[in-house]
Image 1 (cartoon, helix red, strand yellow):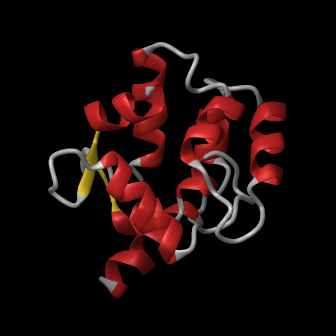
Image 2: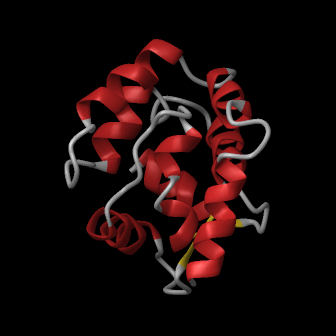
Amino acid sequence: MQEKSIKVSYLYFSLEPKAAEMAMNSILNAADIKKALEAFAAADSFDHKKFFEMVGLKAKSAEDVKKAFLVLDADASGFIEEEELKFVLKGFASDGRDLTDKETKAFLNEADKDGDGMIGIEEFVALVHE
């Protein structure tokens, strides 16, 4: 698991550190993303429902939410695994903080409706739009 975490972290900090941020900015407003990241800057303050609403993702179509999912799925596996979820805020902006273990587990527990330990694209769409 440690090796996977290092690999995922590397994907977010690769030669194109702003690639995910640029992709997300094509879907969402950069100012809204910045404001949301500032609102949840403190450790253990992350609330996915409020965050998705603040960045404007909740109001987006299922198609746009799926585009956001593809940005967050750093290893392109078709799922957001726990190791990727820790770095989810970096998918919105390169200076986003890492989620704490507590936040990561809570987020995963909310989203993982089929209990496979990962968030699939349809689970993500449902989570964002709930």
